[in-house]
Image 1 (tube, rainbow, N blue to C red):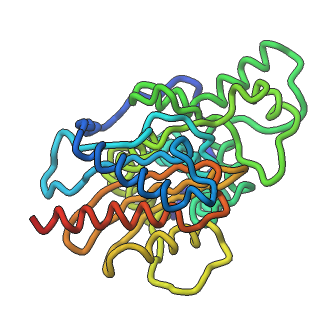
Image 2 (cartoon, helix red, strand yellow; image 1 turned 180 degrees about the horizontal axis):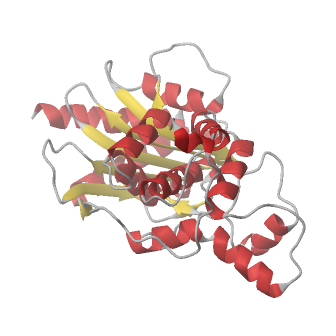
Length: 321
């Protein structure tokens, strides 16, 4: 993200949807993986039930990327993988992938401020940066309510371009059209929520699918895929607690992985929700994407790391066979 392109102003996204430009590897249902994840969920609920975790308060989705050669499909399993959640800051990977796809298609050019905002949106999960990114990729801005119905319809159509891009890719439940806020939305942002009916939403399986498409180069070309994976890479080697929640979530999950593992991740927490989606590369060559979505245990930091630990142990064991 350097050179002459940085000196140019961002080109607002056009309302018409973009069609998938690259082959997207399908997901193959894996009943054995479903059964294993149901067992993991039951064990985790049993361990943390006294702290508020319920069967309906956790969802897990896993996609096995361990195949050493290019394939047309990957095994995928889940426990409550199609349950909708408020995604919190996990939605920011939707804006990241659309941003990179727009650049890859020649529809958007970077500026220094947009580059800075995208970095802060992903590495420290800044809500202010996210608002700037959403404005830049959709051609919309926050402000007072828009009284003219025609102008309001135009604004809503522009704000929905990210959803429009995801629909042809098979994301039927995903809603990624709202900014994230430290406190609350006002004016046209509040009106656009439609009394809560139009809030961001996502399932664990959709989060896992999207992460798979990012790291597999199915969103954008090699250069832009490298940009995304660099921003999502997390240092899990440290032992001391970190002040920044984005980094702390990854560190906690990473501490439960086998030594020598690598992690790329994006977390989210708000209200009573807490989520973490990531790609895990294990030292035995196993490679998988895992999304853990939770409700009701935001202040219980061990829940998500425990799931990561159990799933990693499974892949370490299966990799030895």
